[in-house]
Length: 515
Image 1 (cartoon, rainbow, N blue to C red):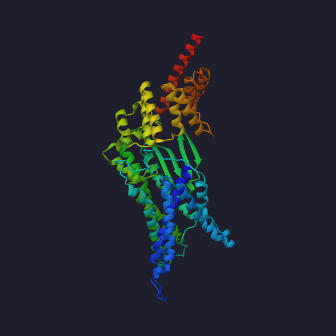
Image 2: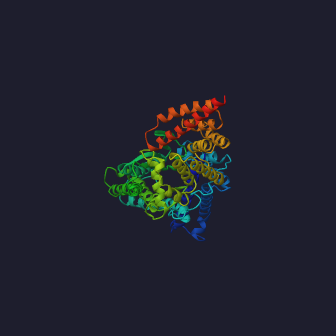
Image 3: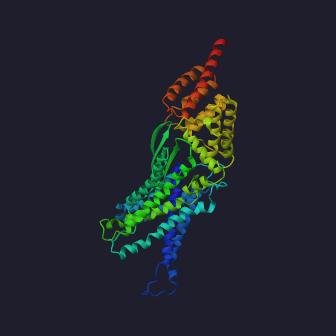
């Protein structure tokens, strides 16, 4: 539901931009020389202008409040959703229009919004979340973060108008002013696919491996060495795209990542320019009837590529421009990206967590990393210490991760909950805390259990002195780890399982002596 609300926030901002554009059209509408005005022509249009402006403000505030998770977000979201349903109410006075797809498409944000905001929620951001404000040195700015996409949408809406006049002047076939929903969806998905393919193909050519991809509602990712797939319905509203690539070696990693990041916007701009060339040569050519599709593809591709080169942050994620700024900077952000590369490298190469640069890890944990990434750095320190058999220090890293979750109200994903269960049980011998995190892990995996849980469960049962059950869980964990790839991260996992087995054997031996 959190993803759906975020998608609705962007939908509200998009609708607000459309109403702002309509306000501009009302102001710029030429005055008819055949009509006599008793007052200023704008006064005659002021009711329409006021209605459009009011709707722009409503949807703009609703989108902003939901994105920022304000206490009033649910109320604004419901209000905007109900207003979005008004076209369907208007069409109800003429049942003929109810059979047309346009009525339902116009009301779709209203239906989805009512579902998204009907229930109360307590989804508070981390006190140190990147989404709240720029972090020093990350290349972003609060004003740019808030306005970049609104400005981009407004530029796209304003930029298409001259093309219709150009098409009419060059004798191209008449076209509807707006593309149909299926056509627009195909154009947007094609743009996203090309952009992300630019990242992916360049990265793979530079010794990187694809570990995840998002294309609208379609999500693929690698989990414990195996590809998974899921369908996220919120993606039908945002048409978001992303790819994750991890290096197979760390030599010259910064240069390779800079090229990979830059490839996405360049692919968008390059294909957009090719589409524009096809558009400009369309008169008299076989593709003349498709000029409107070419126009939308060219304008949106170039605009999306250019906007991605602007450094900004949104929803805890950085644009390609912000990543390039960080990679080219001389501050800790270069080290931050290097560490993320090392962590990814352990999943596809012999590099292990014990090979992390610990001094770099400490520097990054205190500066660029915030929210999700700050927790990641604590767990990276834990993995580094555990892989070096520095068990007391690994336990302290788990304690820091626990403290961070308590202070920031951060809700870790299921994999991290499993790490906290193991750390509290095996390293800190705190069965109560381990059991608490186990319950959170079970809540995450209420519908589908993950085999990785057996390691955590074995450690938990050991800490509770339920040795027979712990050994049984350990055997299932051992069977699972044997199927993991031979990369360094999974070798470290098998080593941790071996340490747990030693502790189990010692406990079993002591119990026999006592008996």
